[in-house]
Length: 252
Image 1 (cartoon, rainbow, N blue to C red):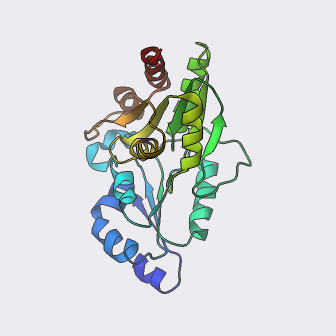
Image 2 (cartoon, helix red, strand yellow):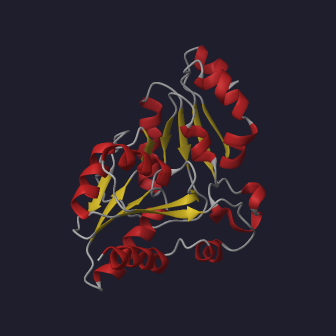
């Protein structure tokens, strides 16, 4: 239906849980939307592990990797509600298929008011000299808190929020990796095929840099409270800060 509406000149938005929006209908997205480059917008809600008690069957941990592999598919992952609003408007204005990844829990507003939303451009939220934290979606709030912990230990972090996973802001990633010399990526997704993989591809081709990818490591999710699951998978400010510090200690 969405592909047909797009073929008729409309701009359809199709939405359901991210695990169903990308997995259950992958064949239709691949052949009816992406192959024809139709102007369909897919909004995947309840993404990642913070769906919580719904468990593995409802936790999309591979949706970004599935969508990244499709030619011409744009992927947006906003950090908070105001940015999600701007991302929705940007998706509607963008010609071609877009996957908009959204979460379930309430999140704090972390993107400065008035920050323009531009597809393909990241946001440098903080500039440091020791290490670069690269995050997307709700994990940007975690990265900011981790940077505060590191700052108390005299470690200054750059923080890049990538609201667009594809096309990636390669220039910003390379610039901050070159300046800091070490990168940690943080995502509420499998480390296979998501943000960490995208950053690794850029650095591997253009600027080999020490890199640690934080996320879910080659496993399905499980049932639990969102906070418990974030702790279990190492996606808390303290765990991110510990990882960054260990990287620097190892390199010194």
